[in-house]
Each structure stands twice: as structure tokens, then as C-alpha cells.
Image 1: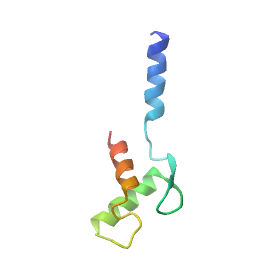
Image 2: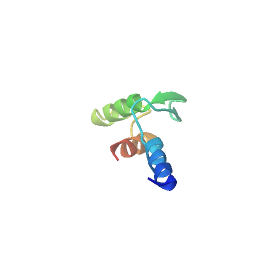
Image 3: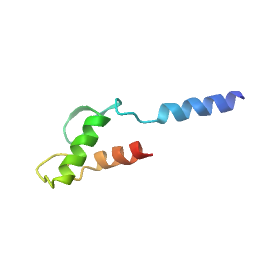
Image 4: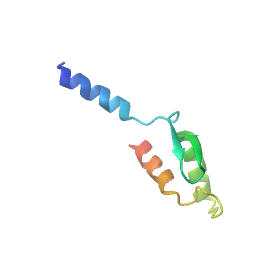
Length: 69
């Protein structure tokens, strides 16, 4: 493998999202794991919980789409 190929493999690995990754949740104003975000986002939308901060959250939707890739 060339150096460029090795760097590309490392870049792709570093971009993968795992359930343990943390991020700052703007609606909740705290750090969450991707796993907690997905659980809360899916639960709020499945049960139509409009009072939840996770209901139709654009950040939760983005996390879900990125994790699905």
C-alpha cells in the first residue's frame, strides 16, 4: 500500500460513528452518546411525544442518518 492509501484508510476509520461517540446536544444542553441520542430520538418520534426535546430534533435526525451509513 502507498502512503496515500494508508492515510485514506485511517481517515475513513476516524469518520465512522460508533454508539460510544459523544457530542454536545444543543436542545438538551449537555453531552450525550450517540446511543442515548438515538434511543431518545426514536422513542420521542415513535410515541409522538411532542413535549420531548428530542421530538423532530434536527441533530438527532442527522446522527441517525450518519450512523446508518
